[in-house]
Image (cartoon, rainbow, N blue to C red):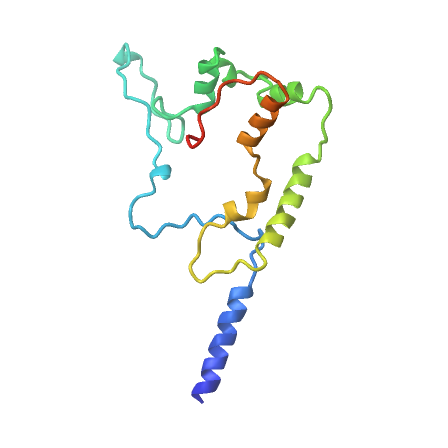
Length: 173
């Protein structure tokens, strides 16, 4: 009786281990069991500031933006010398203008879907025999052959006689 229970338990565990996810295999293992807060989940607000006139403050609107909320797109536009107020104007093309400008010499409209399908197939191939008892991050092992060798490219361009910018010495990358 005990042997049959053990075989049944092992069979169920094996079946559960083989079950796949609908969104495909995951190579990144981001779970942390340290019991400490996740530092990337904390988004600091901007510094509080006193308004010039307390009598002209707008009425609070639940669910609307706060003056101390982060605005990364507007901050990036301001840092690059643009006008962040244009982001909220009606009729502003937004990122479409940037995409159109970048693709002015042609683009494949299905490129995102094609790359997602190819990357999904690649991840499935790399995840076939990578089951581990203790989960670990396998992203870098899977994509290691796809990395570019920056030092090798720099050396090749220098050997070809092309002037290149200075690079950090060996060991400082």
